Image 1 (cartoon, one colour):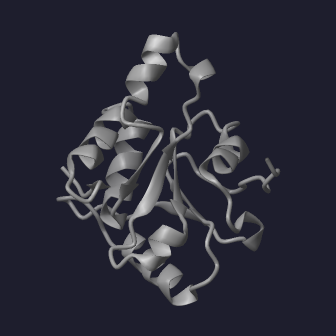
Image 2: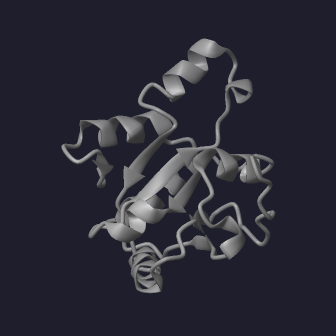
Image 3: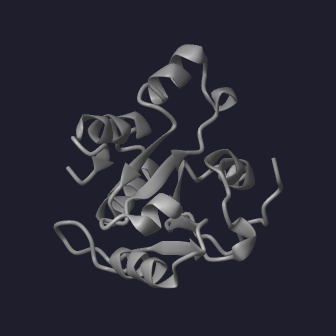
Length: 158
């Protein structure tokens, strides 16, 4: 597994979105534009920290988690990968940063990852996921379950 550059300047209130595909700049700009829109029923201002560094090209979910795991305030990282760029809805890959050693026991980890360590979310869902995980209002498994239950395997919004 390769070592990726450290993420600097990330505020704990910012959703972390990492670009890992560099084949289509127009698609990336579309993702950025979607994430810049106000969100929620109160039209909250989006808070996003973008990592747009070719050193992250083709990074895997495991590599991304290893690179950001020292940030104890971060419970999810969003990857703009090839699938994101090629799909019409630009669904990002949401990956939990929680590792087995972060949990009290195996049962706790198994509950958190019941539907896997990752799922796809539409850009509109990024802010909701990040905000609720940051304040421990909801758990990763609840969002993963919603994506699991969706016919296309996407978290859309509650």
